Length: 361
Ligand code: PMP
Image 1 (cartoon, rainbow, N blue to C red):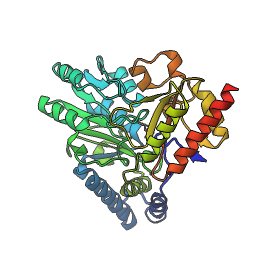
Image 2 (image 1 turned 90 degrees about the vertical axis):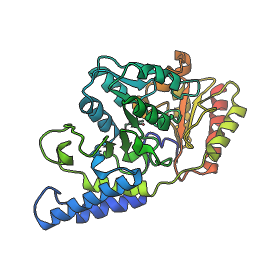
Image 3 (image 1 turned 120 degrees about the vertical axis):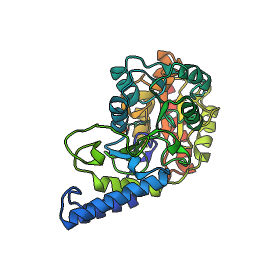
Image 4 (image 1 turned 180 degrees about the vertical axis):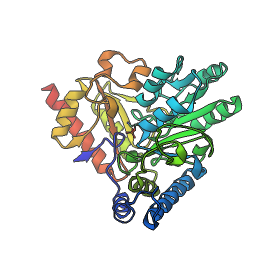
């Protein structure tokens, strides 16, 4: 299968698999128990936290391991901020905006420009009303649009407002230098070659109080429950093996598509984007028609974000850009990985052309 849905999830990196197996075989003991083997498991867990802290450039005590990005976002918004008023962008993942809408009385949305990048001028104005927290993602999961988090971090710091970035789609794909200047960071292992069900939330400081899961002293009392050490070990190993990919295949694919399908829209093309992502509005036919025919030809693609796929018209980004229903039903998302080749992208473009001819006949 030609896999073009890396933003939904990635296959397990071989090094992460090896690390998981080793951790499970050697250090399966409960890190909270008191015998020697349990102590080794606890030490390995500490070491994995330190390695992740090194990569991110933060203190290890700021890291809270979670079951993934959804949990990290929920934990922060429901437990980490007591204030009732927070700001979020109009393109946040549902795990941010749904939690915020449910728990906060006021959650104004910062709009994005035509490239899907948050409007800093709008943010500046909104910061004047002193929200308790600002949550703006680092890279968008649907369009791949990169958000100006370094500038936002500075603006928030100057205004004395805490800034959270959901960096699930950034971490593992682009360098993380400076990311730790954000007060809070969300990351998820299965977006960068790690296993599913493990991720993290970086907190603003080592002694930040947060009581997310109650019932035990794990994770400095912030999240009770036996730690998933093998998953954490595999996550950190996967991240150590990540590199920045090349946009050449994606760019050539988009050129081929634009030449083959007059009226095609490439979302975010003129702005900064992840090297692996292409969000298209096809000129004709519903996205499910494209998807089913491409699946038959061995290509795995998406109709938007994985959290809303299966529904034809549910792209958060397209809604933020003001798309009409008819357009929403024609959105397809292609997202590649570190081992995707130029030939894979060319084969995908050729398959789209074939399907286009089939749908027209
Ligand atoms: N945030 C973003 C930006 C995402 O892309 C995703 C995955 N779709 C999530 C959060 C949720 O991640 P997880 O599967 O780790 O809960």
